[in-house]
Structure formats: structure tokens, C-alpha cells
Length: 330
Image 1 (cartoon, rainbow, N blue to C red):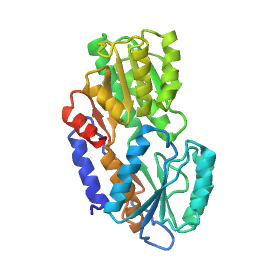
Image 2: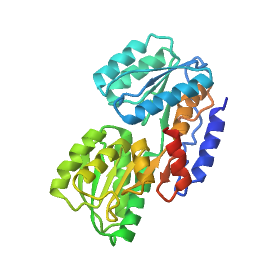
Image 3: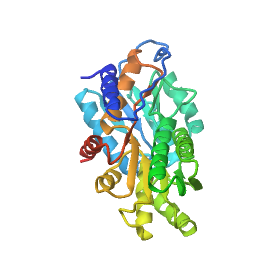
Image 4: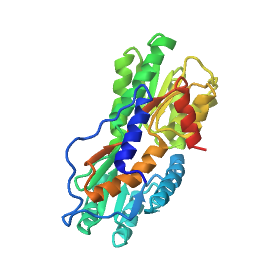
């Protein structure tokens, strides 16, 4: 079985294969997993609350496969996008036989006390998608850099396709640290590469349905919008469908939709040559391996306080990367 070091080496190799990859990590030495010393991690709880997102099913299946290969048990909470349910589920598991929890906090301030209780009970608390004051480690993926890469790509496209002018909509995510940093990166990257493009609206939207509703409403005000960028990849699906529903041709040469995180819908549209033109993402294989290997390494005392899974820009021009991602979603 691969150690976290070998997984990271593989991630770096993958990252180097793409033109705009980012592979930075914190270089501080690892802290002890608990006051009692190294801990063997044999059972992991994955607390990913956004269970309605299409990516959740893919992630769950792949993490289960990796865990089985590495002889680590894994369980998942079913929070159903609800903070109260997330708190309840984590409270229930506190006295269980799990060794580590990977939690994506819907509201970090609401989970701080629980994180401390888990650690006081000798369990590891790994924060997914951000940082908390009480944690054993953090699993992230270059949030602001992801947004900047996509924003810059959209700006470069705008300079070539529409003279560096035009109108843009940002479908943001203000609810999480990850979403806030990604949104800031999208705005900064687009402004830097195409200052002539006007961002006419920033609207909260995470799910495909949220994005469909938000984009439809915004198109009534800005029917000639050229660019829609989403801080969450699944929102890109709703934005694309809204534009198509408004009569925008799928091969429109003056339209750019792009999102952060890959999903099957976006990849298929990109492969088909539509105006879905950019994704900045992690590989599903990479994140599923890290979600097993990182807690194990934190328990052993060999991991860094933060593990940054590298991200890469995927476009119709990066054909090999696009095809590889599509295969991972089959």
C-alpha cells in the first residue's frame, strides 16, 4: 500500500503534467497526534455534509475502495446539508470506536467544541476544506490559487475571443473558508488578466439547482453576459443549463463557463466542444487516497499540519487530462 509520501509523489507527478498546477504545502514540522503519542488509525469517519452534491457519490465510492485496499475501515455520516444534523451525527460518533474523523464543517464555530472533545477522547480531528483552532491536521487543495487559475484562464479567453471586454457573473460560496478563498481568487484572477471585463454580479450558489435559479434571475438583468465562473463545480452545471435555456447556442464563441472541481456533466460538455471551457480541480483518485493516507500519517506523527492536494487547470486543449478525468467518473 502506498504511504502518504508515495501518494504525494504521485500527486506532484500528476501536477507537473499540467501547465498550471500548484503543489504547495506548509513546511512546519508535524505536531504530535495526541498527548499519548503515535496512534494507529484503523477506522475513519468521513463527515462530508453536502450529501446532495453529485460529487459526493463519486467521492464516497472511491474512498471506500481505497480504504478497503489499505485495510482501513471507513464510515460516512449522512448530514443532508444540515448543520444541526451534522452536529448531531458527530455527537453520536464521539463515543464510537473510530480513530479519526475527517470533517467538512458547515460552520466551524459550531463544531469547535466537538473537535476538542474528539481530541480529548484520543481521536484525531482532520478538518477538510479549511482550518479550525482545534484540529489534528487539515486537508486542503490550494483554494485561492484554484480560483486565480480559473479567473486568469477566463480572462485570457476574453482577450482572445471578445477583445478583453464583456460581462461576467461570479457564482460564489460565502459559507465556508474554502468557498470564500476560492471566490476571492476568481475575482482577483479575472481582474488581473482581463481588467476590461466587468463583474456585474456575485451571487451565492452551490448546488446545480441553486445555480440554475440564480443564473436565470441574473440573465433577466444581464442577457448579454459572456462569462460565468463558479466557486463550486456543481454550480457550473446549473449556470450552463440556464444559459442554454435562455437560447444561448452550446457552441457560442462569445461565452465561457468554468467551475472549480470536476464533475461528469462539466467534463462531458467540455469534451463535446461547448462553451463549458475551464475547470480547476483535484483528481478524484488523489483526494480519495489522501483521505485515507493522511489521517494514518497524522496518527503516526509523520504528517505535516496541512496537506495540500495539488490542483490543475483542465481545458479542451489538455486532452489527455480531460480524458483521464472522464474515465475516473465512469
